[in-house]
Length: 484
Image (cartoon, rainbow, N blue to C red; front, side, top):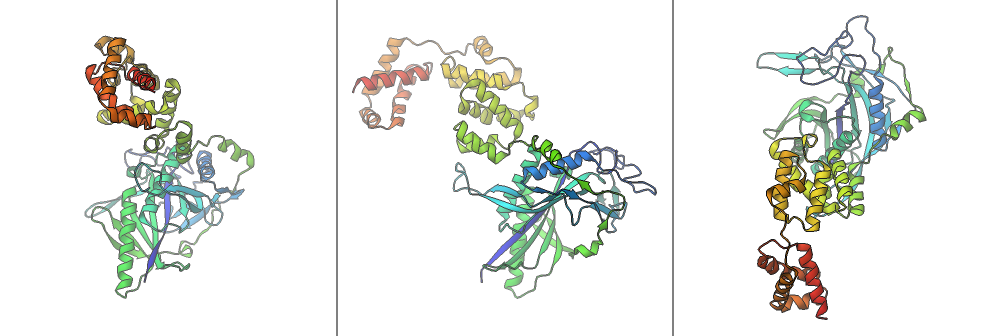
């Protein structure tokens, strides 16, 4: 009997704000344990919460980016449970009136080849709601210590519909969602810092059925790769249970990405187990059209939209756009270099290949680079004019990255500019190359443009690598056209 997997993801994203969700104390990472606390975070008697408007702005903006319906009114609820990481013994969250409803996440599935755009589809969302994060338990061999620095940090929970069917779709979904949050400036989404965390709900059913199977929640998926691997493992585990005649049970399981194994943690809680009720200390929030319009004006172009535009506007190959669009700063850097140079693909190639290589080797961020878009544009123009040949330009780029010096000055200082070629001598070399390759002549005259490349190698060899490729091309075309 054929089965299919049904997958839904619950993604928690820490909102990037200066202070916590319901108090003025700073939000942050890497501080000494229990230093980012105050009476509100620690739930001391007599303290009252006060909403952080910046966090509300962020979740509304996230909803707009993902095409959600922004609720005109949302309210706060208490999710009651006892666990050491929650000092209040309840979490302020949103239950039946979340701030964002529906929406979609666009994903791209792997194409038939790495240089071809894959199939795109949208994964529907159920909701996005805002809540406060809990503290972090640090487990030792004999005891556990709790750090409340994270407690109270604004946290979005983004809940998808159970609409994915493979681990690869879930991986693509999480990759796209993460990029959207970073593009919007909503979160840095660093999973190592706990800024993005994911739980997966997985079930299997017979192909053709519409009713969902027994759901298993998978936790401890602390990297995007572990999300993919954990889901793949759980699908295989459930299929194995069914195939040997066993019964699946609704439960929460812990996945160990290092060993590729999972173990049962507990039976899955239901909503009524948390005894949700409206928080008596917080008023509902009303979101008017002006508020939404202000945030809509701040929404950036998203990666897939940018990629489609780069393909059309700049005529870039798919592989190049796939490098450039996923980092908003890098994409902006490219656009500036493209406009300054007038040669988008050449600028893109220098950025995607040489600049990223040098940044990686130096362990530098783009913001730290001495090579600015104007440097890239100037180098592109030097090569395009024939003043500098490609091999020399590679050497210039390395020096430019190290010093920040302009490429023209480096070329002059190091004697890297191309020597002018005698026109008559170059024409003779071209004539010799044409005469030596009658087959390529026939192919070029028959309309095969690439056939002209068969002549360029011999000409460049005769010129000892110092001839201008642009002049070689122009001379060859003129001589070939003269033959009729």
